[in-house]
Image (cartoon, rainbow, N blue to C red; front, side):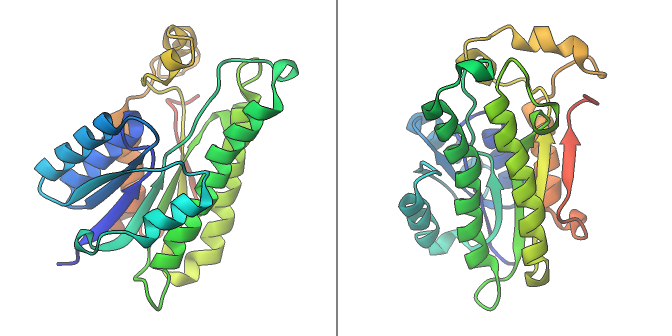
Length: 248
């Protein structure tokens, strides 16, 4: 049986961690990347290993080109063949109106959320594409903010996720003939710690009434959508943007 490796960026917590665990439970080997919390990342990797496969964690700033190249160049042989990439690493800055944005803030959001996706996707395609590769699937984690715009909160983040959706469509068309599928999962309000980290712990309660289903989504629900798009069950799906947002 082929040993399949999935790389999950931003895998130390939240949606990335849930995705890594779900993949491991489905027989994937998993390499997760993290930006700063080594202990949390290693804990997730240990849990993935407990589920029966190979798992590892590596520190990575996805906006640093040389670091991204090194991670993909150094994938452990025992982990198997790279067949999946989940571009989950992303940041959002504290709530702000556009008139108060700094260039430094916007630049960092775009570097991580857009440049990081492109760099990781580039390296994954190089490994997946024939003749050296055996194809694979890429899932980019996007946001409903790409269409809603996030006025008065984080228009810069919304713009970065709109760019991710454009990357998804373009890259899918570029690589369809190489056995590589590329899709986006466009998430709505999710029950993660990101809101508290950005200074608004009550955001879930504030926004939930605007969601037709009346509640935020869970990390498990997000992970399930991501894993479906990586699975052969979605073998005829590429260039798609799947909304997982409770109808919002």
